[in-house]
Length: 462
Ligand code: GAP
Image 1: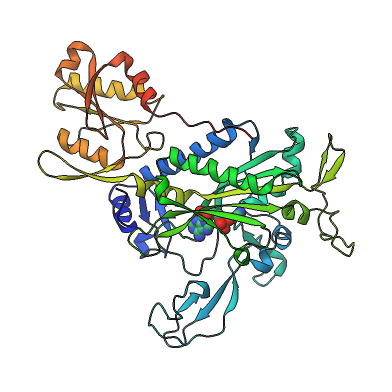
Image 2: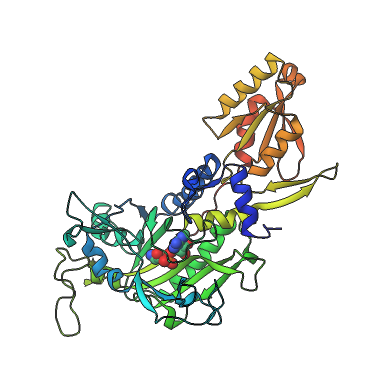
């Protein structure tokens, strides 16, 4: 049973230190969220799982970390300055401002009227000014990147030559992106500041691009499965021609059931696009248009690739799986949410997070906190586990309460130290999902826990 709605996760996230509304002491800032002690661990675990899966476990992907603020020309030639627009309309009655494509049945979502202004474009790149310049100096204008992808394209040759790569190969990057969204909302689903995990996979112009899109869709379905996202809560959306971005010949969105309570429950979790040779071509000094004119007179580099075997030079095509960290975290939390009733008839929340993602892997709980030998042994076990996995010590309640607290934040293992532990050098390991308990020797504990923290799946290379 996944969470019945996003609100259930909002309240759990705030109550247990995953996500807090940002700037609360000043009344908040619309649609901005801060990740608390458990939230930051969960986000890091998602990003590390992704990085390990693509960069470490495969042989064909390198990682980079490019600047958030790039030369403004990057956004001119990528097409973002001209086309990264939302279409805005205003309600003449209540003066509300909305995205034209989100209006249902031509009715104002605030007042129900149908009296609209003409739609006009609004560029959603967030602007800033560089240096100590006058407010109106146009040369100082810069943007906070709206996607991590462009930092990869402009570094294509740097990575390819320094790492001596041959096609096909990919470049992965994870980091913050910014969009001045007109209507952000739904918790961490749509915010103005968010994190992306993008990978640009460079292939020959004669590769089977559509099959490669299918391949990456399958890979990601499997990966989301390994994070505990149920396949039934994912839906594939083949983006129709009229909705494709200017660079794309084909895009498949993987949607997640973020709104199980609604008639239309799906929202985009990620997209997989065939971006053709648009990106490397558009940033290259030698690419010509149909009339033989240079497309980009500002570029000083040519991002083409020489294929030794075919003795041909060309601009590689790109298959791009682009996922959001925050949307992945929200999907993972919603699918991990469950409730269970104990012998006393009390309903408990259990967050069945995949052990690899759980913020805390093991909680060490002394059964008698007034017995120094037991407390000492529990603290020593916590310290011995800490270099291998994230462990915490807690003695701030009765054992039932401590178990419930750990279940609610998804800790896979609770380890209790009792009087007998002092005699037999063993502890009780309790499983979060089954509530079953087993006795394990302290000397075997780290090995035992590591074996039960599921390994990552290894995808086949193409
Ligand atoms: N480079 C291609 C690209 O950026 P996108 O579909 O605009 O494609 C990719 O973004 C992913 O980034 C989305 O599927 C979503 O997971 C995440 N994302 C985009 N805008 C977002 C926002 N305002 N808030 C949270 N996540 C967002």
